[in-house]
Amino acid sequence: MSAITVLNGGTQTTVQDAGRPGFRHLGIPRSGAADKLSFAIANHLVGNAWDTPALECALGGLHLRFEQDTVIALSGAQMWAQINGMNIDLNRAVGVEVGDILTLSYARAGCRGYVAIAGGIAATNFLGSVSTYLPAALGGIEGRALKAGDELTLVSGPQGPVNTIPNGYVPFLSGHAVLRARSGPEFDLLSPDSRRYLFTTPFIATPATDRMGSRLRGDRIVTDQTFAMTSGPLLPGTLQCPPDGQPILALADGHCTGGYARGLHVIQADQWLLGQIGPGMRISFRRCFEEEAPEILQTRNAMWGALIPGFSF
Amino acid sequence: MSAPAPTLSNYGDNAVLVQWDVDGFNAAVSDQVHALAAQLRQGSGFIEVMPGYDSLVVSFDAATMSLCAAAEQIKSAFDTGAKAGSESKGRVVEIPVSYGGADGPDLYAMADRIGQSPQDVIALHSERDYRVCMMGFIPGFAFLSEVASQLHHPRHATPRAVVPAGSVGIANWQTGIYGLESPGGWQIIGRTDLDMFDAARAEPFLVEAGDRIRFVPK
Image 1 (cartoon, chains in turn yellow, green):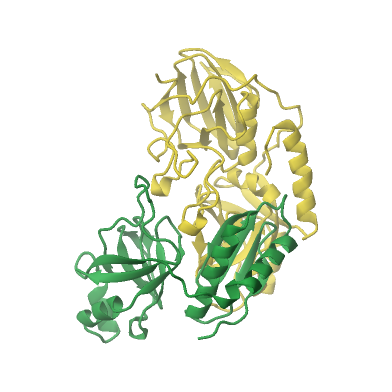
Image 2 (tube, chains in turn red, green):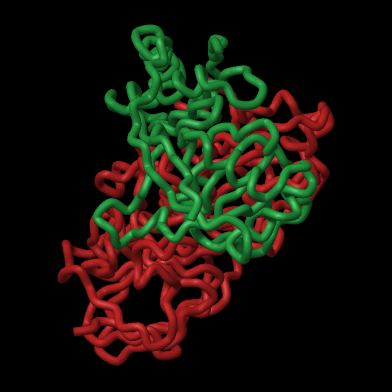
């Protein structure tokens, strides 16, 4: 029996969990919730384990009708969320009843909103994950984005009592993301100007932004001399610098290999924020020193791990 | 062919790059890359072990492993075995290919530009076994080892919007097979009907890095 009917799929809504790590050598990206933190918060609020399958809605426009009583929570991008036309809070568990209609408006800040439902969304498993990977139609609901008429079912009843996240903990999303980064393998091949621009001038995410990557616009980032790189492995969070000077930031579904200079790599502790990059967002990179990165990660893991059992960045 | 010693460098805060300094394809380096990948995969603690043509990237959780510890583990794996770079004993997979025509739209133009007949291109392309050096950028795309020197040919200046799944192409000294329909700039000389990747199959991947491929003209 279906628990949820999709009335409108929105810009792009997919089922995501924590992803399928360990298969990049086969060309399979990790996928999973692009913003791991907001996804974990939404799940925790409804009493789910943090990595339970939930809905990831890019930019907004998702409309759902609930066919049974349940509990939901929204986190991530700042979207107006309403049930039957009445505003509801983000980052709080909300009870819904049979026939209730949830509508999400356009994201005002950030890019991806997460809708967690007590028990989790049932979807197709591939290599240990139900995360949707659109280019190869893996996982999720037939490997595609949700569309009107889809009927979703839940994995189980509620996993546990609802939770709260203390005030002030939920990250504030603005139109400007500051990402701490370390130099990538080919950083030294960039021109001196480019190396300086990377850490001093902001970039803007162009409309060529999706779960695979974000093409940025800003000062030209070029290599000192033209160099022909043999294609090599690539990770999410890496800024690739093609000869046209407009860098590309690899995201959760990013290609597993690339042939351009890997200029920067966003530190593990900040990679969740990559999932909130939407068209028009300003992006700044801040240099992170080698000794600093593990400390930032330990501190953030300690803070969030204490709130959300089992969670780490 | 001998292999130069690789260098290790940090790739952000949660990955290490092992890079061999070579120009073009080097079979001895490729042996070492795959021997090292196999060895590192046996150990624990790494999330991704990603071999390339002349490089290898390992990623890990920076909360449980430091860059130094990762580099130490790689160095010791290299010194204790991978350095010898045992010739890979991967399977040989035969790939039937229909060359030219709609399946290989670039065959004739490419043959013309490199001064060979289309039949010669087919013969040269299918006469040798290739190693699967790397998988990606998308599921099932197999990056293969070097083609005969007469077949070296650059990519299209402007990539095609759609290259069908199974297309066999050439880019500079590389040859490869498109696992899925995708945009692409390689010179497409043929196509196989085999599914390089099928999520519904018990073995979703037809080949893995380290395997050998033999093209059989249809």
